[in-house]
Amino acid sequence: MPAKDQPTWVLDRRRALGDRITELRVARNLVQDQAIELTGIPRTTYQRLERGQADARYSHLLAIARAFEVDVTELVR
Image (cartoon, rainbow, N blue to C red; front, side, top):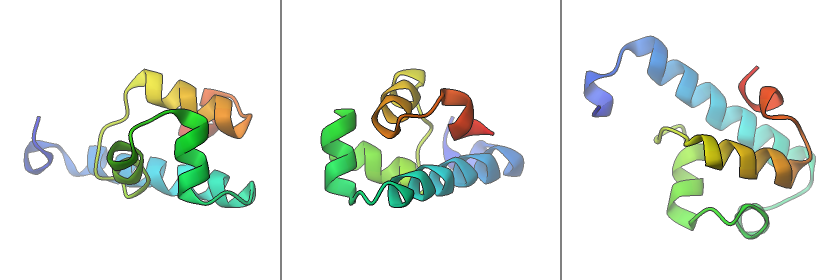
């Protein structure tokens, strides 16, 4: 579903997830390139996730959680 067709609450949660991913990355003193390397997620996808511009696949959430050594629930809390 295109972003313009999604409810505001969905877009807000997507942005919140991006902020949380960024927060965890920075807390671990990683730059984006390091996070991309650790997760194996394509660069543009990872960047869009952090900016809250893309819906995350469950596999992306798993890869990010593993790279940042947190449970998936820590990403989406």
